[in-house]
Image 1 (tube, one colour):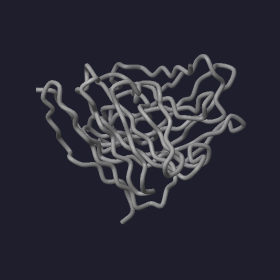
Image 2 (cartoon, one colour):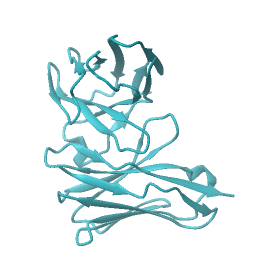
Image 3 (cartoon, rainbow over the protein chains, first blue to last red):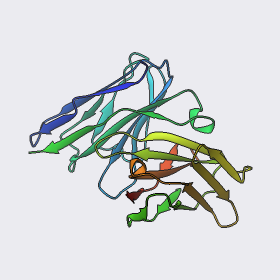
Image 4 (tube, chains in turn blue, yellow):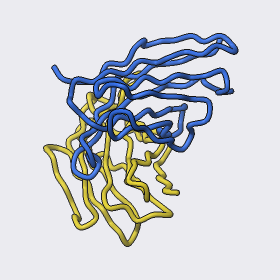
Length: 115
Length: 111
């Protein structure tokens, strides 16, 4: 079945440590997105990529980095510069301009906790 | 930037009744609005999209309206069931054609 796979489901980070969240899709979608969700708040856009080897900062990119070397993969690194990384992270994908006709497809999320 | 407001208080209704959830937007007039369902610990699942020139859209027991005068969308679930219990998210496109999401409204359907 086509879909988006996020791993790991749970991740614990020590202070000062960089961690990488994986996102893989087999939907042949060009566009991919990373959102952060905090309790009671809407999803906030961290980074997005419309095409391979290109990505753009979203509303809250500070302390995060991404790469898009393959169409299927869009990993997110949470760096030590992100001071409040504890949150639920969601990866999504869509066809180009997908939001105008179709919704986004989301993964199951990664819950990151600072210990 | 676009702002999407949804009632943060949970909506509790009895099975068989119609649930109505509200989404209000400010700052930017969107070309479309989307509704998603999110279960605890899971990613959102796309339900419906409605464009600014559409007054109403239906899908099985779901109905969405879009009122550009009130800057509001209503999401209805008719003949609600306990399995409909979840958080429902509203989203709209913003000036950069990305999606802006509301905080969601939790729906609890009691048998």
